[in-house]
Amino acid sequence: MSAEIIRVELGERSYDIEIGAGLIDQAGPRMAPVMAGKRAFVVTDDVVAPLYLDRVLASLDRAGIAHGHVVVPHGEHSKCFAQLEELTETMLDARCERSTMVVALGGGVIGDLTGFAAAILQRGLDFVQIPTTLLAQVDSSVGGKTGINTRQGKNLVGAFHQPRLVLADIDTLNSLDRRQMLAGYAEVVKYGVIDDSLFFAWLEEHGPALIDGDQAARARAVAVSCRAKARIVAADEREGGVRALLNLGHTFGHALEAETGFSEELLHGEAVAVGMVMALRLSARLDLAPPEDCARLERHLARVGLPTGLSRQRHWDVAALVHHMAGDKKVRDGKVTFVLAKGIGQSFLTREVPAAAVRDMLAEFVAG
Image (cartoon, rainbow, N blue to C red; front, side):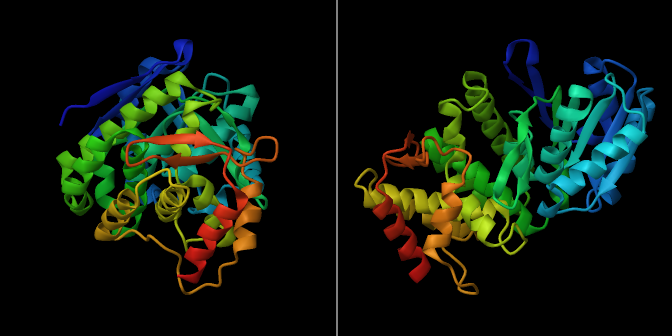
């Protein structure tokens, strides 16, 4: 499979997203044209390292690029101040210079943490994203959002720092277990619900095969998702307007993640899936969207194996969820920015949502 190239148009910060099979082994030669020097520093985690680190380092050797690397613990808990401090100190000990290319090899956690370290080290180092999960390939590796979590919420400390290149190797998806694939798939579905009803219909037909290993379906889904995100980011790099549509399901989802302590009890994509259902249920409750569109979304998510409601293994508290949402970084003048929908493919932004309607919808989910 030859690589498909999608351009993120941001003037002097423009960059390519390359999508295809076997890109891990071509990383060095593909990175070389966008490098200011001949040295790279790779950041990965203890799950990804045994799978792909040696192959990336070998590709750097073939391109004549000197390199160092570090392996950090996997999981959402690595997105914290302590790990950021340890990572930046390690990079400084390794004599990373302003011409050093930082490489994020892994999923969304590695991309967010590494990108933030690159943004602040020596006031900004170039970096490359090599996303190895579906979620990272279709969402978090593109657009320049980097950051860490705090006890107050998710991604509340960070920076906009665009990569110089994104290499999305479809073959890396073969190493994911089904739960991780599904978590990424929720972000794929999001693009259909935002503004592409034809893509949503395509997913209804091809989604199960995509999850089960259809390489062509995976490549198409990643490309369609990246094109959508590239278009939105080019129009609104710093989320002053239309880019906030990409948060469909996230305001609710982040509250669910916070309530579960950002643990593996609820993966980010699983939280987004439930959050999208909440957004459409709220839209229907406000007579903005037809209930049948909400039911259609729920049917598709359930068909592939994603959650559409809250786990009965935990006590959920409406007040706690509302509290988490009030700390969301998209709050303006004390009002939460919601992404709601008039139907599948017709999402919009609003801050004029009655608090009682939100509480009532959440209470419905809590009651099961």
